Amino acid sequence: MNTENTNDQLLLNNFVNGDERSFEMLVKKYRSRIYQTVMYIVRDAEVAKDIVQDVFLKAINEIRKGRYVDQSCFGAWIGRIAHNMAIDHIRRSDKMQMVRNDDEEYDIFDTMRVLDKNREDDIISEQIKQDLKKLVNSLPESQREIIFLRHYAGLKFHEIAEEIDVNLNTALGRMRYALKNLRKMIDDNGVLLAS
Image: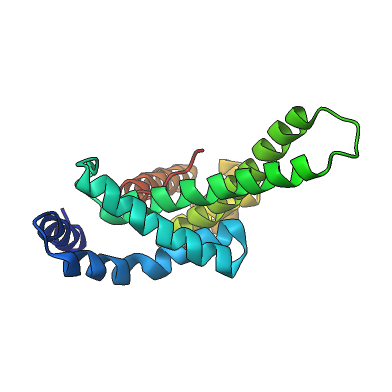
């Protein structure tokens, strides 16, 4: 367990034992990150602020009820709560907009289902792309180059080997190490790459 997670766990234990200031420290630590996550989804500063408050209230309630079981990473846990609450807000607001439009002749429930799925899928897909791009950018240059040439430029491995002037086995090895490093970073950072 890394130091950050250990510190978070210590603060959570103190909070459970009655030290309210410990949770305030967690709020200060994660507020900005949670706000950015929510703001990216809802795209409204006032709504995002309200949701962030609700996220921390929900976290408090879950912890007090003994439902916080992810002892390894508080940041990832509260990030999932924030993401889910922001998506729920989008679903509710889309449904409310659809219900207000009663002049049209169509099956309102079919339209809501389509809008929910499309908008949520778009938001999740964009977030996954951003998260993956950040991870790829943190790889060593040689591995980053292989990922770019293979997945973004669409080159085959023998073309990559020619392009960067290495043998085919070296190109394949770099890709293997790049994927291995990406998997490790995904696990270490609690990144979700699927909806």
